[in-house]
Length: 143
Image 1 (cartoon, rainbow, N blue to C red):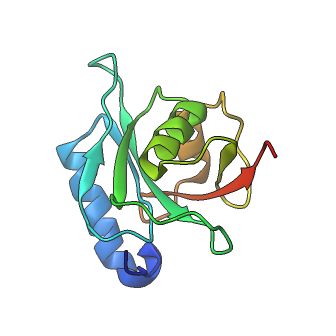
Image 2 (cartoon, rainbow, N blue to C red):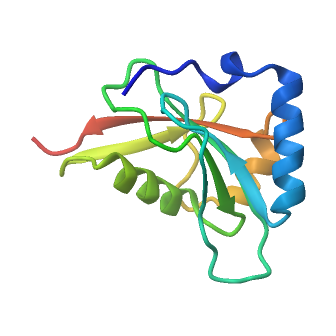
C-alpha cells in the first residue's frame, strides 16, 4: 500500500469544507470521519440500528509512529449514537489486528473514553472544515 499524505495536506481547506458540506447534505444523519494512509477516496457508510439517528464525518489517520498499516477507506460516515468503543472495534476489524494488540484513537491529543458517543466527540472536537480527525495507534497488551 503506497504512503498517502495526511488528509489536510492532500486537500485544500476550501476543498475539505466543500466536501464535508456535500457529504452532510447527502447524508444529513451521518458524521464524516476520514483515515489517512490509504489508497482510495471511497466512502464507507456505517449503518445505524435506528433510522432516525444522525451520523458524523470522521477522519481516522494513522499515528505517525505507529506500526499499523493504513486503511483502505479514507472517509467514514459514522452514526451519531455509535460509541467510540464500537468505532474502535470496527477499525480493529478493518486493520486485521493480531490477537493481543490494542487499538487506541486520539482526538486533539486526547484519548476519548470508549463509552463516549461519536456525537459528543464530534460536537466538542470537529475541525472547522466539518470533519472530525482521529488518529489511531496500537500497543501490545499481552506478551
